[in-house]
Structures are given as structure tokens and as C-alpha cells.
Length: 481
Ligand code: GLN
Image (cartoon, rainbow, N blue to C red):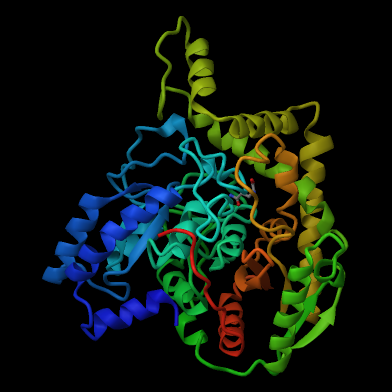
């Protein structure tokens, strides 16, 4: 059982009082955070208030007392919200995101805002203006990105669950690197209201936790339509927690691409663990079907046009007038805007704004942006076709082990390529889970993905919960104290 459900049970059976738990945990959380940099800020006062409310019964609900990490791109009313950027260094959220309101209503405790890449752009957390979070299994390595702080906080036991956002893999890559489970919901399953926009047609908030059941508990609370976000769709929210109860997988058809599972460039340990995981699903009754999705290799090229294009437009609002940092000395309005943005944004964000503006400019729109959208539609169709034959798809989360910190900052392209297994899913708007399947020879976690049809989160969670019973993931000792 994951730590989230373990703790829920302890609170319910009164094995731990809220006050005792937090008096014990907070010093540990602070100590570990000094090593991991998982939180950009720990909300000591807020935790104190929330624990008092729990004691008086004013704070209650299905998540009562659970310590959660919230990616610093999701608004919590009155708290700082920086998107790990200098440009929003002193910004405070005027209201809470819908997802935060929903967690709040169910009694969760917000321990802190977790580190991430600036405006969620990156795969290693090194684009944070406040320094990277670290991987709890090896402090010299990245926890992945962009939701690296959330993954580091869950794996390092600085919370029992977290919210991340996933535009091109930012929940699943860090989940894989840190040996935890992360779910990117279907586009439209979860409200984006109050979440800082990166690429609006791709962004989705999702849970990160120890296992399927723990993710299900968080997803249950945050899912559903929202009058404040017209893209959050009115579709039924199934009982995800119930979906995790034991059930056989005998009619389940899973597609896989032999190219992905046996690729030359994949580390040996990855291939071995992927085969083992596949065998476990087979033991449970699932049947595997090889299939090649031939357009997927083009997804990186399409994504790195579409996402920057949307970002360049979303980030236009940081102009020194309405939000965030304003330069000190300037002589004209134009100079003020240019200077404020030059000082406030980091390199990767600037790079994306430039690529995006270029791709949208009148002379190049057709050559780049329209083409990328066309490729996106081909990828969507290809998934639709695949899901006529199978129920789920299975492949790795990452082609590489967690990146060593400080080595790849100068080579953004090599990091972009590590998104190969996650990005296609965002382009098609589908739900996907990343879950731990073993370790490589350096004792670093390896992750795999299950991808489902639109709004098939219950099916994904059901399948993963069955897998976990068949092949439990054993947590190795952490490198942090
Ligand atoms: N690595 C991808 C990027 O840099 C994904 C980011 C994300 O999902 N937020 O854009």
C-alpha cells in the first residue's frame, strides 16, 4: 500500500493524531529539503493553520490531513506563485486554482510549493531560476522535469502525494526518474483554471504518488467539469479508487511497439525490465500485440513548434505592467517591456518565445505552425486507429536514465529528444500513467507507461493496480537523510 493510503488509514484508526504527525514530520521535511531542493518554499504557517483546523474538525474530508506538494505553477490563494521564474519572484496568487480548491475542500494539507522548470519548460528541473531539485536516489542526478520538485518530494518522502503538470511529459518523466507513479489525465479531465499556462492545448494537471491507488485518490478529487475552464469537459467521473480493486485482466489487449521496447539505443536494463513487466501483464491474462505507430517519431518536431508557439502567446502577458518584475530604469514604454522581460526570463523561456514567435510569424506560419498541426492530426488519427485494435499501449517513459546534473544545460536539443516517449500522448490528448518497473545497474529507477483511450483513466488505474499486486516495486534506500 502506498504511503498516502497508509497515512489515511493511520489517521482514521487514530494511530496518529494530526498534531503529532506534523510535529514529527515537519523537521524531517525541512532537513530533507535542504538536500533535495524539492520545495521552493515550505508553508510553515499554512501547515500550522491547517493542522489546527484539522484538530477542531473544521478541516475534514476524504484527504483529511494528507501532506501534499503543489507544483509552483498552480495557484494557492495568498501564497507566492513563481513558476520558478525570476519574473514572478514576488507574485502572490489572488485566488486558488480549481484543483487546489477541490483538494482544500477535502481536507488536504499543503506543505509547500514544489520546484520545477521555469514555466514548466524543461525535462531536468535545471531551468528553475532557483536551482534544480535533486533525485532522492542519487543527489548528483536530476529528478526529471519539469515537475521535478513534485517527484523529488514524493520519492524523498517530503509528502505523500503531489500535483504536477504535464504538457509534454512533465509528470511522467520525473515519475520515472524518481521511482514513483504519475498520471497525465486526458486533456479536459482536469480543470486548468488558476494554473499558469504554458501551452494551453497540451497542459494538464495530474497526480504523482507512490502507486495507482494513491494517484486514484487524488485524481478523484481534482477531476471534473469547471465553469471557470470551458475545456474541462462534462464527462462522468468514474470511481477511480474502486477501479483499483482486484480484477482480472483477462480480456485486456495491450499494444506495444517492438521498436520501442527493443530499441538499440535503450539501456540493457531497461529492455530487461520492460520484458519482465510485459510478462507480468501476460500472467494476469493480458494479451500483447505488436504494432508500429509510424508517425510517432515526428512528434518531437511537431511539439517543439506547437508548444513554443502557444507559449510565446501565453507569456506575452508578462510585460512589466500587469504581472511581476519591472525593470528599474527605462526611458520609454517599449524599453521598459523589453528590459523587464530580458531580466525576468531565463534562457530556455527566451528560446521558446523566439522559436514560437518565429513559427507564428506571417512568412513562416504555413511552413512551420500549420505543418506541425497537420502532423499532430496524423498522430491523433494513428492513436485512434491503434485503439480500435487494442485497449492500452505499453512502452517506456524515458529512453535514458536520470540526467547527471549540470551536464546538459548547454545542449537543449539532447534534452528535447528524451521526450520521445511522452510527447505523442500529449499531442493526442490521451491519458497515460508512468509507473516504476525496476532499477538499472546504478540502482536508478526505470519507468514504463500505459497509455489509454480518451477518458480511460479508470481502465489505466485498474490495470496498473493489478500489475502492482503481481509485481510489487520495492523501494531501495534513499540517498537523502
Ligand atoms: N520537456 C518538455 C518541454 O520542455 C515537457 C514539459 C512539460 O511537460 N511541461 O516542453
